Image (cartoon, rainbow, N blue to C red):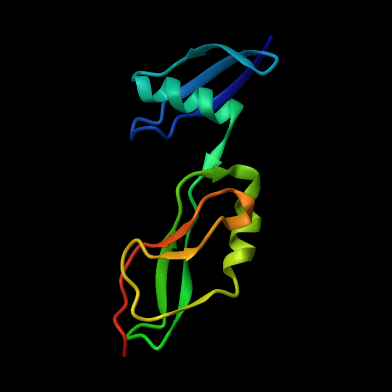
Length: 120
């Protein structure tokens, strides 16, 4: 049996979690005060994911940059995701939810605009 110590980020309490594993199987989660802690711990030790938020350039817009984000991607794909966005420039106008980059880093996840930019 192996144990891992985590700090939960599922809610503002920041509970100290102890996860007991048998190989890749979660046997027990201790220390959580809410269900979110159990869910977070199981996901973090078996399939850790992250949300990348950043900005990309806007051409012909009232603002030169726009915030973008995506849903969870595998933690080990973060740097590939950021590298793929480095040279991206989108044309104004841009609306919230517009797809900026499809299938980022081969994850099947699209990067979308988290804001809006009107044409200049």
